[in-house]
Length: 292
Image (tube, rainbow, N blue to C red; front, side, top):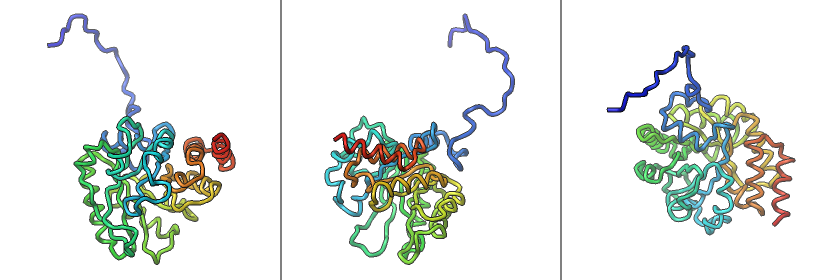
């Protein structure tokens, strides 16, 4: 038994209601278990409620795309400025040092290549492997309005169940059918379906009236970077998304395909975490570029 000699009694306290741990910095997530909240807090930082995710999972269907030919060379200079890396288990094991402090969101869906005309992904990574890899989240692409919509949504639901059991948050990566515009109507449809099915946070594209997407989604929304844009356009898009309710960005090509990737991720970080205007953020990128 513990030695009771010298034990100091607790002082009188007043009931103060809920403690500081009762709340949570992300909408729709206050009910989650501690492990879920802790993992989400690694991805989306509590001090700002924002995240800069670096998407480098393109190779799971595109192969060695431009900028990702040698992953170690791409990741080494960029990882210190990312809050989270989104990648595959193959790249995590082969190309990321175990001492990396970034949160990891692991790509857990796949099953087709860029050569396929129809989107036909399914759940293809065991949750037990995600636990072994100590990931903070699992990402799954859903295809709303596509021929394999039912398959992806059912598989997504199965992953959500497994994530709940393991205490690992699930990120829904939304995509819409080829005949559907990437507009607020369809992106809000996809995002809301994902949240209704249990997604803990959602990744979707920026569009006009983006507030409709973020406002009708009951869990955090992260903006997808999409195709490579001129730096000023990409920073403006990120700024607008944050101002319209996104909790962060998950950018890939707009960073690693930039002519100064480090400068670009620094600029994106300034926009996301410090509300820097695009014009000022562009100077960060240009200064880094000119200093090389």
